[in-house]
Length: 253
Image (cartoon, rainbow, N blue to C red; front, side, top):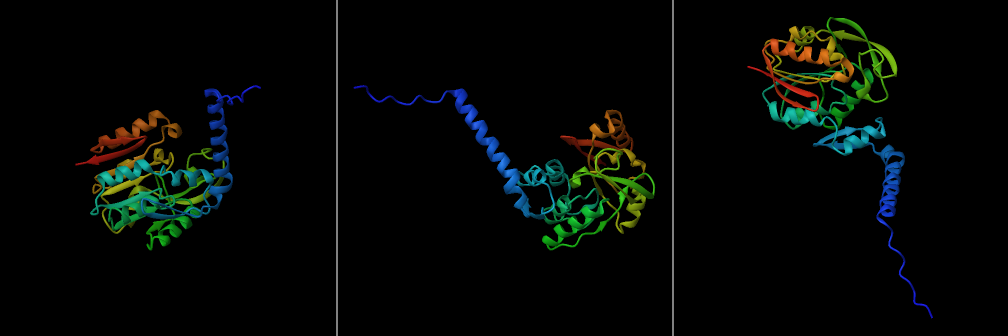
């Protein structure tokens, strides 16, 4: 009579393959069935309506990967006494973070996409706040510009062909015009406009501004223009205090 044999233990290669197949299944299930049903996410104490966002963006929010650099730099360098002009407010997270977590009370947001403005307003309402938000694009001069709109809000850009989506005409204003409308002297600028920073006349930065948090996009505007923007700000008396994955914080004495 033969004795029963012990089943052979799967090899390392087999175990690795099974693990890879299981992780692939979990990821596909998450993006196809779980994430589409997520309607609200809380990040750093800020409630966000994500009903209209893609599964990819919802996943980034759930994993805490959204606006990490801006959030960290704002927390390090901004104070409750700052008066902020934010250009490229997107869904309102950074504005809500600065006001709710940092205690900033003078805060104005500029956002070019009218659909994104509506989402920003919903997110402020979720957090029992009312935004000061202007539906404008920052440009070199006042007038009107073409905004290219992609699938998610972060794919909006004034750069031609940058998104592959549809295009709409939106009102634009120069930095000096925006600053003149504030009703207070800004001490800090937060700028994230997906490559449109190349069109900004930084000579119009108000003398009251001592801090600038800005994401630069060399993949969109090129390395030469990126370095030129940094040089322009250095010539205006700013220094690069910190750089975090393409987001710069500039300080001026």
